[in-house]
Image 1 (cartoon, rainbow, N blue to C red):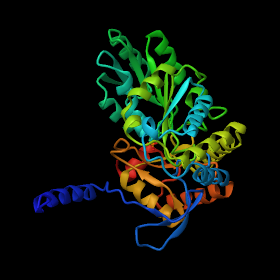
Image 2: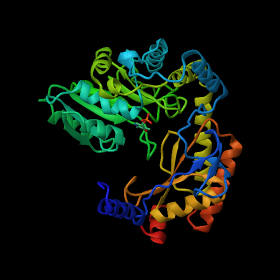
Image 3: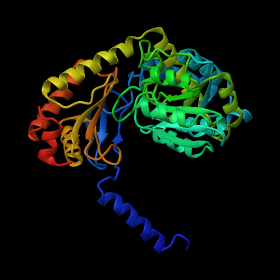
Image 4: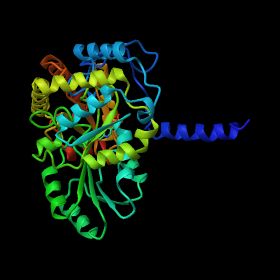
Length: 415
Ligand SMILES: *Cc1c(COP(=O)(O)O)cnc(C)c1O
């Protein structure tokens, strides 16, 4: 037998190592549609329980919106369930092109190409566009999918310190001998919730003749006055060469992604990007749902405005209660606890109080920077936030951390 005892034992040991390190990821089974309140089975086998969800990427509350669900049903009825083909053989319907055009209009770019996911968009774009004569200069905190996409590309790889414009400028000077320089960044960084300084990046790109690529997965639909993304927030719409983003967060939350930007770059990806060429794109159901999402959020900024209100209210609630929050303007609000075990204990106790939020610690965030990352949604009502705030206060009193800062918490609990 090829998969014999020795292979089995090596893998069992590796899995045990993950458990022993306290970084084993246990799935939680949700017995309900995504929303402000969900029904969760955790740990598996336990009775289900209704909780307030504070950790979804359902920023606009559209994941289970009745109009989006209705549109998805129509998509199923009119265009069937699956394509059974990749795009360039017989897997493109007119509605795929319609959705691409709508995304182009919404993002203020020249053209758009759908991918099975944003992870796939990031895996495909760099290799398709850049060669060994070029350099990619990425912020050190970019998403894992960008790191992987860069690995697949033959261009030289370099990084700059997170959001450090001085360091980026040095790198751009250093790489003036390359054919193309591409600056690569997230629009909103998912662990800290901070927004990229895209106006300064564009200015540096113009000064040093570089292209700019932004992954706006945590921004598309709600960052900026009309929710276009980090480029709108920073006043540089039309100046970003490549935007990659996901349909799997604010824009309905199902799945799918895209790259959007300069006409030639999009065309080249249509010709060459491997995840586009060799994997099915989003199914008709999702295309219909996503078109409806874009129509809804283009008609009114009501949901994005409610999300902003909720974010401000939640920040105020927790700050006044004495929590130590990471500063920022996005609906990602990290509650800093510094110690990994404390973050896990507080998350567990919050769950007992009916609040679902997850602790993050090393290696997902630096050592000594453990936290509970809360995320707001337009699906939250004020009552949800009041209840969640009360639970945070109750649990934190138990651990005596209210009103305490980094130094005091580390003194009490260690790093
Ligand atoms: C979530 C996320 C992705 C992955 O999106 P999928 O469409 O689910 O593959 C990529 N990049 C960033 C920055 C993300 O936050």
